[in-house]
Image 1 (cartoon, one colour):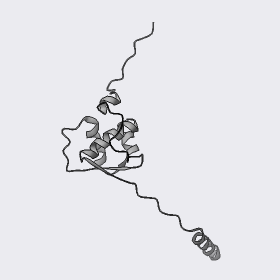
Image 2 (tube, one colour):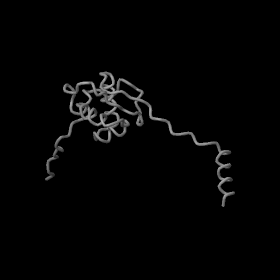
Image 3 (spheres, helix red, strand yellow):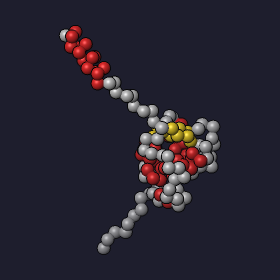
Image 4 (cartoon, helix red, strand yellow):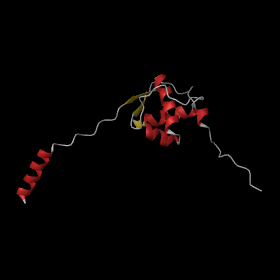
Length: 119
């Protein structure tokens, strides 16, 4: 006889977390979008997952992927939560700072030649 399937304690289905919605209200969120909590917004009426997002992001900007990882939720579910928090003014987002442009190959060659001449 097969033992009965036991549910993991504390497991909440994603559709419960998102109030049954599968798509965020904003399509501008990607994995590297940075999320910043607005400190002046009350959190007492937020659900537990949204409150956790606020706690996480009050320590500094986190990417959407990092928030999803900390919450142990799928990125798609996290995007729905974040969209709700953006709509309510609890969080704001910004694009990540672009990485510095690499110098021109000519400049790199001049530096290399200068270093070699000193040897």
